[in-house]
Image (cartoon, rainbow over all chains, first blue to last red; front, side, top):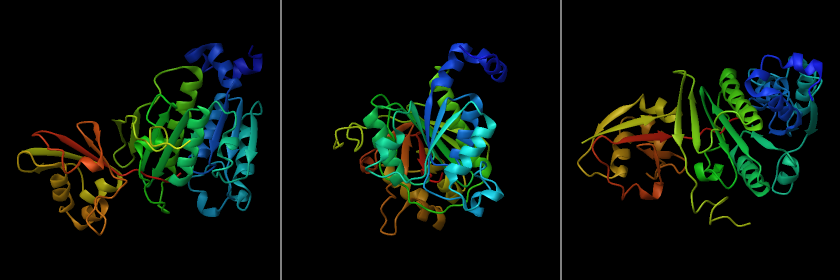
Length: 244
Length: 92
């Protein structure tokens, strides 16, 4: 049952998926891996939507050059762990939220533990080596993964449903190079919020997830394109090429 | 025959926009990619390594369906095909 305060707080969205949908949001555990350009907007809107628990994972501390796009971190947070800075803002936005933080990098050993018993994982990291770790951990645990990435004015989003849809490695068998690319904060905002929207849809059972489809965002022309993506039988992570 | 080439992100910036490319009937996808690479030095660098190999992470779609890089020499194009070229981005 929702409390009166919750009914008031979520009054403008409950008509979209009912009180049952709102209760599902309140029980959902979402792992947001990366508290940077994508993780900040994604986590903020998930908190506002009434997600029950957000698990934040990030090894970094706030730098001044992050502040053009990592909107949960403010000038006074420079030097603090990103997870601590982000958790504080999320709880200020919604005191009903539970936030657990891990100030740690994802590696082969801890990946499955760090995404833990989450219902869904938001990939908000900034390199493909870490994304492949997350992909494998999510596949192993059968947890859906919402991938996002940005560069400049460009971005991409897809939702992986383990064993049912193309996984990250099916779509991106060869990683693009890690590079310190310029990025417009609004690009990370657009992509991070599409990721948050995917989570809300998944948890409430609303609409069609971006499964088997890769959404490309081109901010220069303000256009989106959807590419069909299929499972690869010989995928190194989810197909016959997998060693698990 | 004419092939439409759509491109995204850095590849689009390098090529300058969508293209319609004329190639001989039955030309393989590899031939088309070489023509696109010849558009400019930027296009060449966006698509190909210094040794001339297609960059491994470039995603190729033909009429909305994924094409594996290993198939570009064998895949014969047809008039009116649309080829999409997409470099994944990695930032977060």
